[in-house]
Image (cartoon, rainbow, N blue to C red; front, side):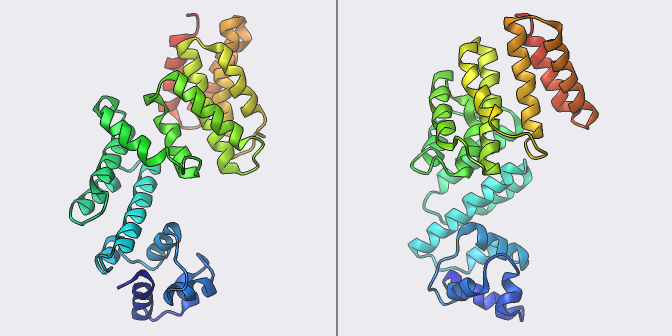
Length: 284
């Protein structure tokens, strides 16, 4: 059975009209064409429909025909589920997805299992478990012709530590130049996340001459509630850099104030990490 026909079967079994079924996820007219197999539904909308109508994703899979195009759609859905679980820092969700993958046929089954392994390692911060082959699989999977898609860029932000400073410098400048002057909040947060990582690397590697490019890119982005966290961390790193070149007490006081702000707002673990970073690099 195809995706369109299977969606229709579940909708009718629940006694819902097309409008009740789609809610406000997609338009009713577009969905009608999905059922008639005139249009294909994208992965994110399909997952949202299944979740909204309380249908198990893997049960839905089991009812689909194992044709090549259906298998590819299954795989795309699983990739989306893996990424969502990773963003939620849910190792339990990743573990459940892994169990399901092991029991079904997919074109790139081993690759999916490696992605789950790497994401689990990243969540648990046990980086030594990642092999060179794992890094290669991740690079081939996410950093290809679709590199500039938002999901891939978010994953790259979390994977930067596994590349050399020079490689990151090349890739991050390419990304920021591509997204320069964007008003899309998600793209702005990507720029800010990249800046946080690169400023941290600049401090660790004593490459302060490279920091200015990233500081200027971040300064273009307006501080608002959605960007406040990222801009605060960047301000901390900027003050560390300023202190290293001109050790005035005001820069150190600014760093301590930002760390205190995170702590009193309930982010004690993160504030401790920042304080340890400050202690390690201030005065070197």
